[in-house]
Length: 276
Image 1 (tube, rainbow, N blue to C red):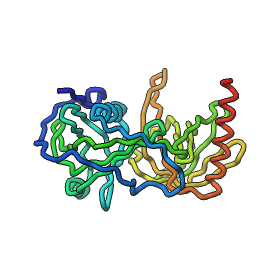
Image 2 (cartoon, rainbow, N blue to C red):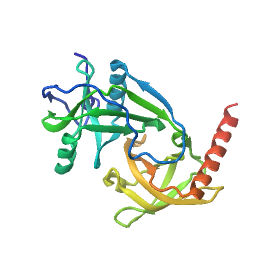
Image 3 (cartoon, one colour):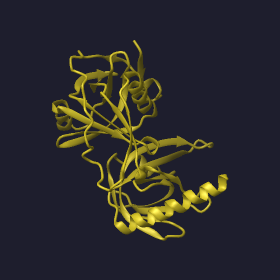
């Protein structure tokens, strides 16, 4: 049996697993992401249908600890992959914190998962999930998707922000306190912010920060809403905590999109001129 346990790669969790019976058919179809934006952007789709390749892709998501959104009719949960069983073609993902939502997930005939590691959108759908236990705790188990899609869209093309003259993001946290973070990279779909401010450790996944200002040196600034979709913590050479927060643009006025498009084009042209 070929297995992967995400918690063995993460020091804050140790693994043991009790499996439930696997009786569901492993036939899924790819559907339109109900949470996807409506901007016209032709995707370049790469579908993987080989179970071994699907297993590797799921294992990579688990190994990185990436957050995924699992959507079902009427709702969604934010989760992580915990375990991947390549032989049985199943994977386990985290139980939610709301009992009502967990019941809805178990009752849903189909789940649509999506994530955006490194700016590449990953999407797949599964049939009904089952309840199982993992590390002594409740968890969900589902069959491998029939196809796993990688989609590279123009809004996911990211460029790194300047380091010497950094762009700044400022606004209010949910509790009303002000923040000022540096921009790590940005795209037409979202922005990554970096900070050593420990207040962000308590930010909940999916929280929306309203009327946030992104300040750039040349084009000025844009004001929009940001939705938290990823949260990572690392350590500096001195042992201090550093946070990288990934946000999706929850609102995108036309003027802001035009400003970002010009800025991204300028940064990419500058980057290319430096590597020639």
